[in-house]
Length: 96
Length: 78
Image 1 (cartoon, each protein chain N blue to C red):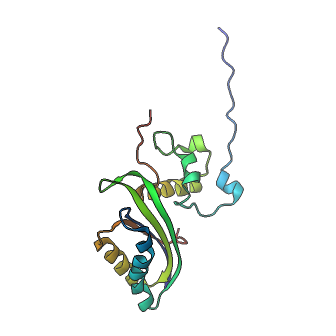
Image 2 (cartoon, rainbow over the protein chains, first blue to last red):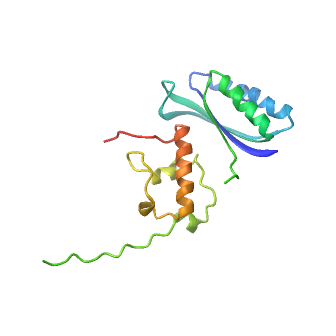
Image 3 (cartoon, rainbow over the protein chains, first blue to last red):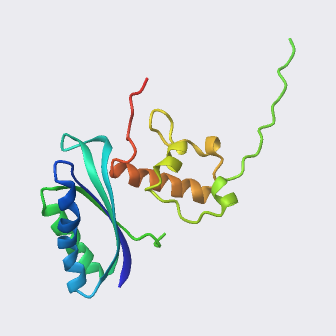
């Protein structure tokens, strides 16, 4: 089990209310596999420094979690398959 | 012709070493903005005065932030 930090940029056309439940839906993969989801921090709408997919804005979210490497890979794959997700980044904050 | 006086450059001390910051967070754009020029380029070590290790950490943090569109790759503000 390792500690990960995942940042997700979602499409700003999504309803802000639906963001939390949809993210929790994604994170079910982690909990069913025995991992733990820590802090789920939704920054809300933010201007992008440059357009991604011709969109000037995105909804940012940062998730802290502990899980097996395979699970995180699967989570990242599923996120990227979703059309509402513009970009993701998986990091191990302690790993330097 | 009078020679211009030779200026001794003042030795800069790495801010991160002084503050004892171990991890440079890519999400902290306010901090990272101090280390990019108005064109969006990463400032050189001779400008920032960072030590080798922290300059590298700052550079990777900026690159991570750029990938997530937190910082610009270029900005044409002129």
